Length: 278
Image (cartoon, rainbow, N blue to C red; front, side, top):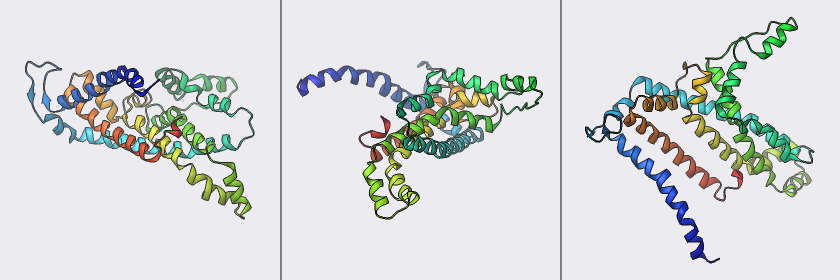
């Protein structure tokens, strides 16, 4: 099949890309610079009112919370994710893919149901406290509605997105490099820091971006586990669209979009072939 035939087959993809991706972006950009009731064109006027709302204290706090939770979740996931990926990489399991499948198994269930189940465990009365109470142990504790609950939920949800790229990067490191390092007199610890870790940074960076972005823009987990006490920018966007304030919601969505574009540029710079995303 020649290149011309491939181009013809790719045309439907580009059509859907323009319709489902680029057109909504331009619509959001347009709505960011106007004032209207809903999306009605009857009384639509050019306005920068949405930009003034960005400076409000509540919006700035939401941005601050989003950045803090996104950074905290990313750092914690980096530490836990690298440890898990490295242990699986160095393990003697015959079928490491099965181990990874078990690790990402929670991702196969619905996010809302999974988060709600996690929230129930964080309540004072849950299945575990009931079982312990039957054994005469009172271990009831309630953290739902706190920052800790939201952080645990974010790490629990997005940790697999950190493990997989790191493991993929580790798998692509030639064993001969480690053997050569050991033969040259380096210890296993020195070999890890001077050979293995630098070569796996590509996966660590890709995983960090894959965790940071959904954490920054998400709204379901903070809403469910935080009981509305922890407001992230995703919650502000959701509330804006629910209240038909499409202009302000669109502007915030466009701001988040710049973070996404920046992340894509970083991935393209670090991992041009997308090896760690496989």
